[in-house]
Length: 104
Image (cartoon, rainbow, N blue to C red; front, side):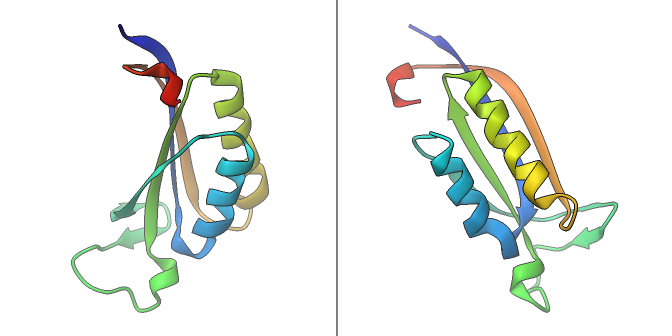
């Protein structure tokens, strides 16, 4: 009943969210999940408990699952190549098992 798939997670600034979502859709993903983010890393602390001075500099986590691992990797690489020289970001991919593989 379970099928193999690939989950891709992108953590990016809200400023580029719409452009990243466009790349995900253009790459063939059937959907995604978008979650407001908070955390700390090389570019400082991003707090969720209070409003950012500029909302566009807050972060979001975008996740999508695809049955085709090569397409998922291509999307992740396109996002990184297009934006990560100029903006902070994180991308990671993991193998997952899904029910209703036709949805992905």
